[in-house]
Image (tube, rainbow, N blue to C red):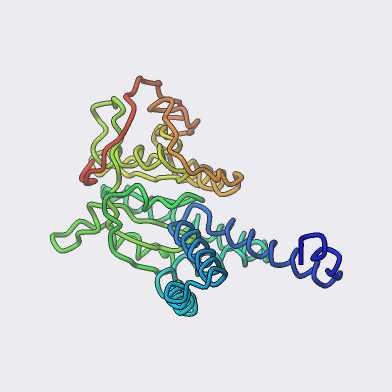
Length: 298
């Protein structure tokens, strides 16, 4: 049967079936875009194609091996990528239930701002990464420890309180889909020429934002300042209202869908932040590239 005969034999049910399958596959790939699951799915698709070729050419051994592997690949994917699958289901729920998504976002912003305010008042340094479409763990030298907990003020503070046995304090807290996903994440440091008052924690914040669409909140333990880094640019000091405004604007912006690193354009103030003094900081020159390193005290 050639392609023309196949088209002639198709019914409207076959057309609907094909469109639905294509739509489901496209939606899943779009929801998983930017995660580490995509290369694995591509590999599985290539293995499935290889299995089909082996059957067509009557290559028995390879065909049987690939067939048995593909029968269990669903279980392997569920076990190995349970976080990505949960994230995909959360995003699907947010798209079909926008009201609940808005409520969750508003609650998360309120708790995050309150947590940052208390940490800054206590002069405790902190680094919070609000992940967008891009999987920031791909650019981090250490993915830290899995937390997978609701975003609560007390949890944010507990993870950042400096203590000899609290190793998470020297890393970043990763926030995914309004949940605390990981702690102790080691960020890549920017190689921009920064103001001397900025420490390693600020370099980590800028470094993550240069190579992803994340919004990074950084707190200085020396000055008690709150700043945000986005697209390789760090803001002036923010008060609680300014921080909330930045986070809400970041949440409402359309997905960037980026896959490749982007270069920074300036170092301070170009985010357009309204800080404690309400002024924008000066732009400065920078060097290209970045290196993975441990995020320490600022």
